[in-house]
Length: 116
Image (tube, rainbow, N blue to C red):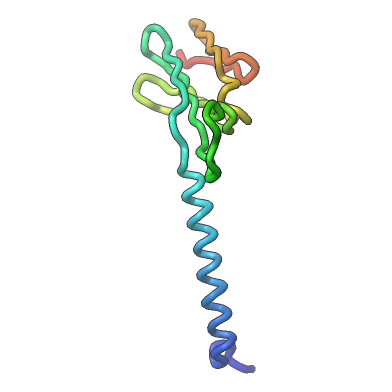
């Protein structure tokens, strides 16, 4: 059995493949971390809030297109603990949040119960 690292061409190919794989993984991780707060909807008593996070795009957007981006909607308590989460294809879809005593309703997106 021959050692694949004995051949300098094979060694160069393996090192190149590792570098490309690491670069792709780093890019995917960096893109995942690229979010910014788009909107916040606090409950009047301050015990809960809904936050809408927009995923940044690597491509530039025209003015007024920030709401076209996909994103994440989160329900948090006053301490910032994540209670519920869902994704949305466009953050501008989250334009109305209705607070009840025992639930929060996000028009066309979600209805979540609030903890006691």
